[in-house]
Amino acid sequence: MAAPRFHELEIAAVRNETPDAVAITFAIPEESREAFAFLPGQYLTLRADIGGEDMRRSYSICSPLQDQGRRTVGVKRIADGRFSGFAQTLKQGDRIQVMPPQGRFTAEIGGEHDYLLLAAGSGITPCLSIAKSVLAGEPDSTVTLLYANRNSASVMFRDDLNDLKDRYTTRFTLLHVMDEEVQDVEIMNGRLDAAKLETLASHGLIDPARADAIYICGPEPMIRAASTAMAALGVDEDRIKLELFTPAPGAAPAAAPKAKAATAAKHGAAVDIILDGARRTIEVDAATDTVLSAATKAGMDLPYSCAGGMCCTCRCRIVEGSATMDENFSLEPWEIEAGFTLSCQARPDTDRLVLDFDAQ
Ligand code: FES
Image (cartoon, rainbow, N blue to C red; front, side, top):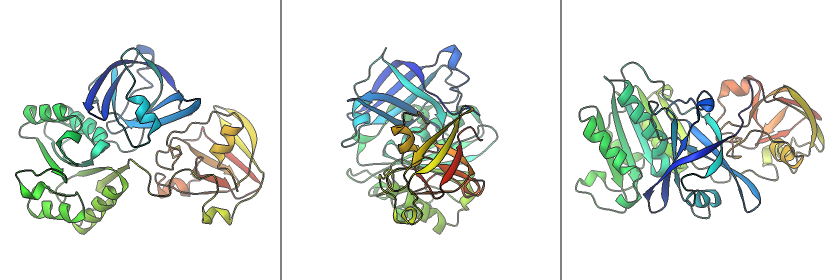
């Protein structure tokens, strides 16, 4: 399978969602429709030259499966976020590099299910796509969306959510939790932590035990709290999907290896990179570089997005030798068992390493 490549897409529309968030809609030309087919919950990686630096960031698709020919992502400005700040300046007609949809936080549409979606902040974006796609594509399914924000001004996609509420009165339940604004129902005030989730479950406002699938998306503390609560409520892990929006503290791509990798670091390993059927050898000093950072310095254009071990865009298979990852928030145990690694986190353990980016 070929590694994902960027396509230049035109922005068909930009809509302000909140004072610090926009929804950007891309027109998908006929010739790119196949490449941009997606499952609800997946994300797009955008790429731009910002201040002379090649930057890329992933943003979840919020449009439904049924919305052919357009893909919309939600971008919330984050403090000191150069890309998210740049994204707020984009306008209709601009053209930007976009990688086809990726990600595993997905829902297969079909059948009859009860979905529980737990979202915080901009974690609403993949959940909105899942909710819209399920409600339109599974006429007998139900969706409960619990959405945490600081206050009503920070609620993204308010109109879309209200529209779903009006359209699917018996199948869609929307619950807002806010920690900086007092709502009429006392139980809906405060932080969305494990205690809050257990309280909401004990009052019957959410029913994790009945849900066929639970999707959790937000910043790392919220993911951790929701996972703890689901475990306390006896929910099987295989019914839960998680999407981490921001890396855990210390998860940013490090120039120097973490302690675990440092013990295995080899200087000047010869690393063969197989990409799109071609092979090239680069030298990687594990004390100072990951495979991805060394390849970038060598002028190679490897596929990547978050560079933080979260998205799997940089996944490749170790064909020969071994490597240690600094962090891994995305590869499943079976993938590691099968020899896959994340090039943005991998540092060679052996003098020779062969990595296949074309491997499925
Ligand atoms: S680029 Fe996202 S995990 Fe490596």
